[in-house]
Amino acid sequence: MTILDKIVARKREEILENKTQNPISVLEKSEFFDRECYSLKEALTNPEKIGLIAEFKRKSPSKGILNADADVAETTKGYVAAGASVLSVLTDVDFFNGSNENLIKARKVNEVPILRKDFIVDEYQILEAKSIGADVILLIAACLSPEELKSLGAFAQSLGMSVLLEVHDKHELLCSISPYIDAIGVNNRNLSTFNVDIQTSFELADLIPNEFVKVSESALSNPQTVIDLKNVGYRGFLIGETFMKTPDPANACRKFVEEVRNL
Ligand SMILES: O=P(O)(O)OC[C@@H](O)[C@@H](O)c1c[nH]c2ccccc12
Image 1 (tube, rainbow, N blue to C red):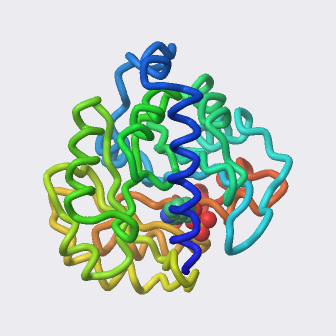
Image 2: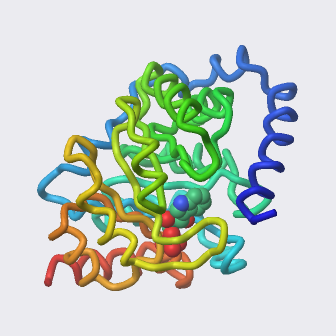
């Protein structure tokens, strides 16, 4: 059993618990449920920005605790002030020390698209994402069939949300493309083995059809890599650890954006 299998197995239990505690009728009454979502594509294609998706992640299964203390409202506001176009907030509790509460706190103080970073396998989680104020959901090809990717993507888009499809190899990419996604993220980290290799993004760049915004995810720590990825067509850069492992993630983000701009 890989770590991804473990996470998904636990996720299915959690969904059952949440469905009884917070039925859909309750989710639909949330203050955020009827708000209009911000568009991921629009945010990432703004020519004045570098296309940063800055992530709030306290812990990861591969690295352990990154930051137990950072305040989510202050950090996410700082990310946006630093120039981030989009925020990503981990909501998985057991493996990433995230929470829905963290996303709600980020939503209340920011006016940019927010990605609910979690392992989505059920429509219920998409309604939950909408109810906590998320604009974007992640669909991970490694844990969903092509049919599930299509139906979950179509469901999210029917609610006005954007869909980021995550792939980490050519096979996943080629069998997951559908009209029900807005952007394609190449994860440089293999979620089953935790191996990281930025070449993955360079190798898959040309295989992603141009109608999708191209996003490179994970293990980005060098400002020059952002420039090199831009040159092969990427418009989004998802960064968590590089910022969160420092005592002041927003400040680390500000320095990173400045360095990219000066290159
Ligand atoms: O912290 P990093 O190496 O900058 O990576 C961020 C993000 O890409 C990573 O957290 C991530 C990518 N895909 C995921 C799926 C689930 C949980 C987390 C992730």
